[in-house]
Every structure is written in C-alpha cells, then in structure tokens.
Length: 350
Image (cartoon, rainbow, N blue to C red):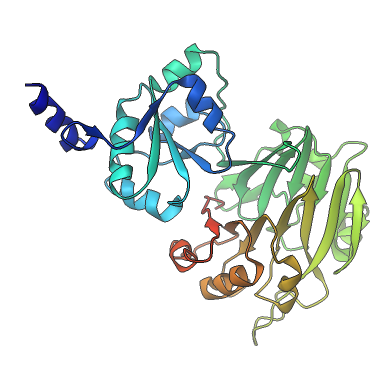
C-alpha cells in the first residue's frame, strides 16, 4: 500500500519516481534565509485575489491552476536560479515544485505555506506590484517595484527613488499619494509616458532631488539638469546621464540625439542602467558590465526585440529587465540570451 501511495503522489507531480521526491521542503526559518539570496526567485502559485490579500515581498505570481503554468514559468524565470515556491498551506506549491523540477528547475517548497509563515510572525505585503530585491556590495538592500511602462520605484537604504513617475497610462492608475515622498526623482524626457508634472509635485518634499534633462527642467521650472555624458554625485548616489536616441531612418523624430537621457545609478557599488527611450546605440558600450539594465522594447519608438538582444550582448548586464514594451512581444528574449550568462526577468510593467 505504501508503494502504491508513493506512486500516486508521483502522478500528482510530487515525486519523479516511486519514493523519490524531486524538490526540497524547507521550514519557515530556512525559507526566510532564501528570500534574501540573489540567486533565488520567490514564486507564489496562488490565485491573484489571494496574492493581493498578502504575500512575501519580492514574490512573482504565477497561478498553479493555469493550464500553461509550466510554460509561463519557463518564459519568465531562469533555470539557473533556485525557485522558492509557496502557496496557502503548502499543497499546491508542492505540486508546482514537482512539476517545475521535472522540467529542470531546482525547487524548494515552503512547508505549511504562507499560513505557517504568518504564524511564525514573518512579514507579508499587500503591494501588488512585482518586486525584485538585490544586495549591494556592503549588504544594503535595493528593491525594485515594477509600477507601469517606464515608471519604476526603487527603495535603497531607507531612501525612495522614482524613475519617470506617471499617474495614468491607459487603464492603469498609480496612486502616488499612497507612497512615501521621494528622496530622488529622475526623469528621462518630456513625453507623456515619462514626464508628469502632477506626479512629480505629489512625490516631492522640501529636500527632494529632481534630476532631469534640460527640456523637462524648462517645462517644470525646477530641477537639476544633466546633459548626455555628464556625471554627478547626489548624496551617496553616483549618477551618469547616458544618451538616449533613435537611429533608424524614419524614427529619429521620436527621440533626437542629444535631447533625452538614460541614467546609470551607482548605489553602494551596485550599477543600474535605466536606458530611457533609445535604440541600440554605440554609447551603450559605456554601460558594459553593469549589474542591472532596464532596456526599452516597443517598436517603432524604441527598440525591436532584435535590437534589444543586440544591446544586451553589448552591455552584458548580470540582470536584464525588458521594460516599456507596450504591445511588443518580449517573451522570446530570454531564450535568445540563454547562452550569454544574462538573467532576463520579464515583469508586467504595462
């Protein structure tokens, strides 16, 4: 009977063969240690309404009950990372961990699920934006929140950083009044999906540092102006303004050379390149070896997927976030960069 039961579990995805489990079970303490490891992706396999009620910070949501669950994971999560899986009680996540291990992932399941996590007094968040957490060289935490399109919220060492904050795009609305005031705001250029004077005012406090290109500073009537190639240090953040422009014939009017910015932010040694609206330009060689790169992908205004792949091969970031992608299909990018040693993370910025 025991052998029959074990074989039955295998058919449910909990084991790969009779009596052999293909993933690890961790208790809350062990699982919590994984959540701060940059080589680990936290995966919540519950439904969206459960996720919204409270989840582990930094978790990616992919519903285990969806028919294409495994395919979604393969499109979005790298196989060279450990996948730390959880659900409500641990049953769904055990099933999911077995399925993912069967296709080559190294998986860890949270015993007792988020119920056990909460009972142990561990924190949860109701932030519904996808979150990625990194550590700087000295161990400081940098958290990236995918807001929408080109809008990114970064938390670093107790400081709030906003990139191109915009309140509304299409049907998506960002309530900046519910967020802490910004310590730093960076604006790349004046287009409506990057520059929103009301959002800037809502986020600003007396000592907020507002860094932008000349055109946006003229429109807003304030701000620290950085031109292409200029560098500065604002408190403990090093900033370099990178060129961002179109090169393809018939597109140069969208983002002319010399007007708009991308930015490289250095946060305690962690280099983050936010490219702004640009194609794959020669100046990207100056961003080679950054830790994290946000590259835009919406033709005809920025890069095609093919251009983005070329840019990524030039820059060779450790982690790549395609963003600003609108209706452009970016799902094939991870496969095209799988041999480059680049961790491609597709987040829902739309």
